[in-house]
Amino acid sequence: MRHYETLFVLKPTLTEEESKAKFDFIKEVIEKNGGEIAAYEDFGVRKLAYPIEKFERGHYYVIYFKAPSTTVLELERIYRITEDVIRFLTMKYETKKDVAAWEKMVQRAQKATQKETAAAE
Image 1 (spheres, one colour):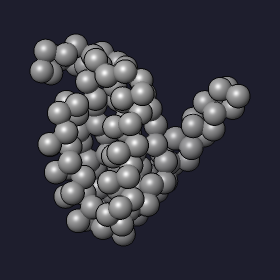
Image 2: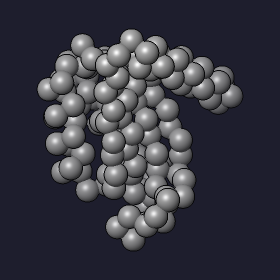
Image 3: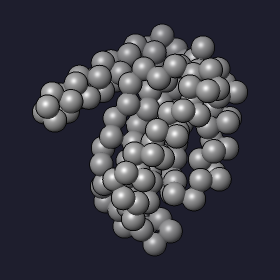
Image 4: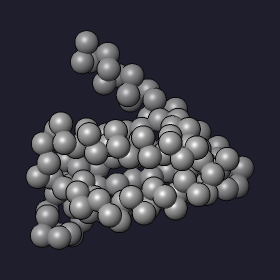
């Protein structure tokens, strides 16, 4: 299985519950197609570099995962047909150096998620 990172931006008009549901749906697509999610990050609503579909802002999510290449094809197909996704990018990490960088990002994302969970309690 290969190492991947996917970033997607949802419309800012979605409620928090709707955004969470879309995020959970994307995670489910990865897992149902043979992928293993290592970590994820929710960057919240941020200003876009340029307007996309007349939106100035978007809700950013990043997921780090391992999966066969067919999973990425299905994931990108889902991104294209989901109206609430305004942008997406999937990156593959191949070399040993890239995989080492991927592992560092996963550790950082896991620490950030743990801090958010601890702060919420």
